[in-house]
Amino acid sequence: MYKPLRIGFIGAGNMAFGIAKGMLSGNVLPVNIKVSAPSSRNMKRFQEVGISVTHSNAEVVCGSDVVFVAVKPHLVRLVLSEISQYVTKKHIVVSVAAGVTLSVLEELLPENSIVIRLMPNLPCLVQEGALLFTRGANAKQEHGDVLRSLLHCCGLVEEGPEAWIDIHTGLSGSGVAFVYLFAEALAEGAVKMGMPSSLAHSIASQTVLGAGRLLRDSGKHPAQLRSEVCTPGGTTIYGLHTLEQGGLRASVMSAVESATERARELGSK
Ligand SMILES: NC(=O)c1ccc[n+]([C@@H]2O[C@H](COP(=O)([O-])OP(=O)(O)OC[C@H]3O[C@@H](n4cnc5c(N)ncnc54)[C@H](OP(=O)(O)O)[C@@H]3O)[C@@H](O)[C@H]2O)c1
Image (tube, rainbow, N blue to C red; front, side):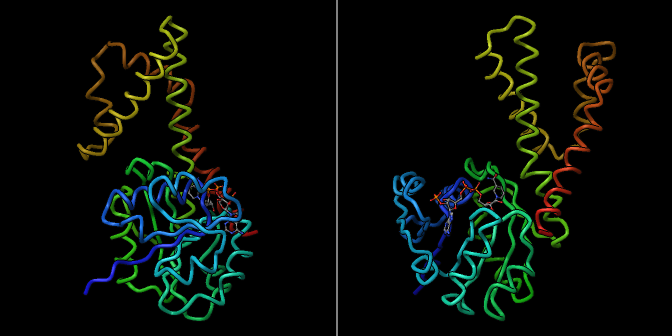
């Protein structure tokens, strides 16, 4: 008989909740998920959706087939040394910690452990995440397929070489904050021109959402979509000229570059 996979989360923070929530909108039942954290402060939202919680990391590992390590990067060593004795060759251990490399993860876990490094982002919460994973030395294609099947409702799930994980962190993990800054600035421009703030913020967020969906669903290059909005001599080309004068394109490229370099720096510590 088909036995559902048991999923564990070590760490009950924002990312663990985002991934768990995405999974629940797929075919994973809350009864098959367990979460651990030292305090109870983040537990309530898991309990509210029927997920059981514990303060024991060992309990999560022993009761799971797939274990997500979702603690802050500086705590990964501590947590892996604690759970290592309970990890078997049957477990799939998935780390979402920014900057923590596969070689560090593999070194801290028993020999031949199946390890996957995953970089999600927070829109998993609304099933619109962008997730990139890379498999460790002992993780086979079938283990990647298991992860994909668990995460497919979290958003876009792609696989790539480990060198791309830090770039993805800059592009998408941090990128959501860059988009929020842009949305905030759009709204503030409208407030400056006399629109009430709450209306300006609703319209700015809908504009970002609509532009994003059209960009993804049309499959068109952003430059093409941009040119479709530009009437010669019209409002948009005037606004775009102002953005180019302000160096928006170069600033955004540099922001992805800085965030990627920071992820690499954190990983090398
Ligand atoms: N947030 C993002 O957008 C994002 C994106 C990509 C990747 N990530 C990665 O996701 C990981 C978690 O980030 P987050 O934003 O979810 O952090 P967070 O909200 O601060 O949550 C961290 C969780 O770890 C728990 N924890 C601390 N020490 C622990 C221990 N010894 N054993 C078990 N659990 C422990 C905390 O417990 P308490 O509840 O008791 O405080 C908390 O629930 C990080 O490594 C980060 O790099 C985050």
